[in-house]
Image (cartoon, rainbow over all chains, first blue to last red; front, side):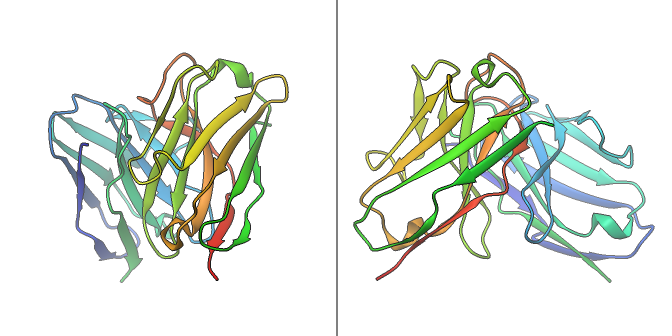
Length: 107
Length: 123
């Protein structure tokens, strides 16, 4: 199975900050990387698919980049509603493994 | 409105069985592969299983292989997960999730998620 490793595991930031979360795959996955946001008590929400495509309805302050084994999710200017946990997921091969999550907290 | 609604969770003893259901609405269910993803309390997301559009192909995480069976009834727009030989480590919130693209199988993002149904395995 492909292992996905996110860093950092947690992050404190302020409204307006630019934030970057990294995801690394244990083997190359081309562009087959997705990002989800999960708020407490809610289901995950798809933000980015195939590394850099913005899901419909997701604000443009979210962006994704990368290919191969290294990927990033960037939030250009944090808003209060962005404080949540973020997960990457590879969709290169079954099982579609997730990273362990990055909890983004208010500083 | 595109929606997935899980049901069937509850408290079950170790070694017991449970069947989860996921009712789909607002999209052509038979066009999409469907997945089960679980989340243990306070933990991250774990993909559990996927089933193809027709139900003819399935895949499972190693942690549930041989104990869980995924199926679907396209005439009822419903996805199922039959769980048996349940263990304490199967305790989790179980989500059903739809593949983003029609025609894909196990290699796609999940664009629609249900609200989840909780399974607790305990004596």
